[in-house]
Length: 357
Image 1 (cartoon, rainbow, N blue to C red):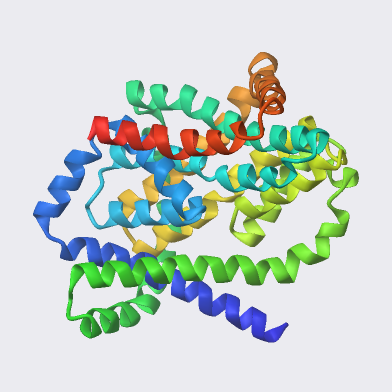
Image 2 (cartoon, one colour):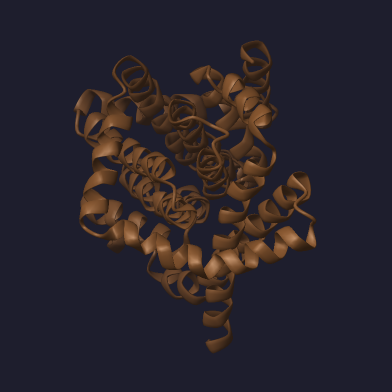
């Protein structure tokens, strides 16, 4: 138990070093690289599909959003360009649960329930992006609200937390820079690896400490009503710092018929909010105000999606009914579900990125 706790602290420090180091690496690339990247991500749709593609590749919105936050801190991505990328990450992260549902491909009834549960999360996030991204592009409401949130955070004294974080991580970053001779590519690769490995270690260690003890209680009692399910999803995700694991754990329960889609629905919404803590921590580690605004925009996006969609009975049913319908259609061919993964998470985003950039 003690070594696992020590491992979590060490992994957390490695994560903070990785995130802060990425910001340093992007700055080392110089102004020409920043200007070129800013021009590429100036198209919000390109940013959205880049977010989907990148997150689907790494299977972690925590990793992709941390990289986005670091790029903002390094001046490589603007605030308007970062928000669509973070929204895209929310869509891309659903790939893990979707792939877990394919385990039941040869058992029709179980697969229909499991696949419906995976599709539900995907379709809710797609609907949330479809509603909030146009609002953000037209009014800038998310970024303005996030800016106010960052100000309130600063006035409460929270921004001061960034100083000890930077003080703690800067010696390790300076050492890395000296070892790698201030080479931007080498530093970027090293810090991305640090971030990725640290997040994997944190998730695995926390899972062994926490999730193994609560899996036995992962039943109807915890999903007695939507408030409890949503809170449970939030708390589990905050603890394990990954939405992929909690949402994936719900798939076998759905397949077995233990949980219904309407019970999993609010649980998934809780996981969406819980996973924003990683981006907030990453932003604090950079000490950059714009990065903190991006992290707040990520939080607001997930918070606002709940009353807008879940709070409106008609909209609430859209992802639910659509997930049930698509799951039934996928029973007709066992090749359709894997094909949908390639199309939805890779082919469509890649085509749009190529066309839009």
